[in-house]
Amino acid sequence: MPVGEIIAIGTELLLGEIQDTNTATIARKFRDAGIDLYRTMIVGDNPERIAQAIREALTRSDIVITTGGLGPTVDDPTRLAVAKAFGTELEFHPKLWDQIQERFNRFQRRATENNRRQAYIPGGSTAIENPVGTAPAFFVEKDGKLVISLPGVPREMEHILQHAVMPLLDQHYQLNGIIKTFVLHTAGVGESQVDEWIGELENNANPTVGLLAHPGQVDIRVAAKAGSEEEADALIAEMVSQVQKLVGVAIYGSDQMTLEQVVLNRLALHNWQLSLVECGLGGAVAEKLNRAGFDVDRARVLPELCQVADLQRLAQKQLAATGTQVALGAGFYPGPVQQDLYLYLITPNSTLEVNRSYGGPPAQGLPWAVQTALDFVRRNIP
Image 1 (cartoon, rainbow, N blue to C red):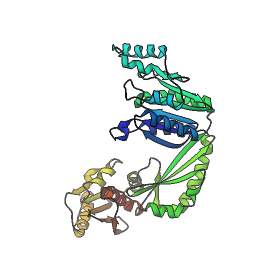
Image 2 (cartoon, rainbow, N blue to C red):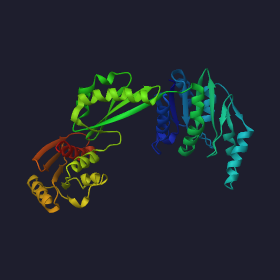
Image 3 (tube, one colour):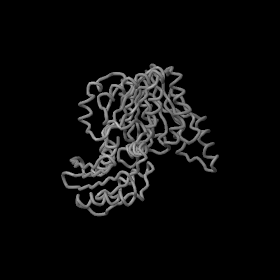
Image 4 (cartoon, rainbow, N blue to C red):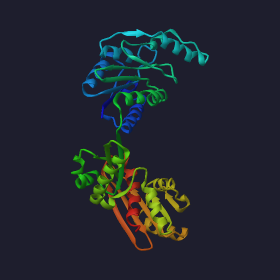
């Protein structure tokens, strides 16, 4: 499989003025085509630094894609930077200038003289027509490697990537592989605990296993490289089976499945309905459940913090008032260092209560509390 790198170009990216979405789009295309992506970077609008980044990338990779810096202004340096990287000069292409003027004419506008800069591309490069914008793309091939420069406007970049670049890469490298991923979701355990369980599997070469922590949730990503989707699925299935044996009930779902969906599905299996009382959470639990179909009329949200005894009493009252079979009382008590969560659950089989504490970043306390509350319900619905 060929190896690729992505260089996103633009000082506005480094300043945080806009977000780089192009890298994620290209990465997904690479993954689906079986192209290994080992590195991405952002470089400001400086021709020398961009050229250096390209030269360095070519020592490691077969494919280097740049995005951005192909506009008509002085601070659009990618064309010059690529020329410097290959020790060549920019060359004017009359055909490209005709295409640029035609684009402007189509919208009853006149191409200005600075747009003429976009008709210059590095000597020895091949132009790629941009049918949805005014900035032509181009690629340079040397020693079996490709540098491909695409516009930074996401809509233009995506169109050229789909209709010109991926076919070019397929033809050049006879792409016949795939990289496929599968994600298992866990709740109620921390990242270190999951790592303790499956650390040995994280050293596997293919498929690879990795962890991604969120507030109240840890994802386990399994990624397989194979010659076909069927082969990738088989590799993933075998690894997922091993992970499931080691992690057990902490896994609540996979891929697009959400914890709130799992909770409501489990309740539905028993023809049970849930009522809810929240204090200190601002309705966050009800809001998340509502996205999966929960009737918020069965939720009572208290704006102020409440005592544990009051929360218990109100949960019992809510159960009776709504005619539901299950009631959850959730109280969140944030502090400067530690944030506490009290959960009280009434089911037809039992009444349970538990205290949980969170010591991570304060801003993550609320989403942690919501996930922890939902997981408490999940684990106690048979």
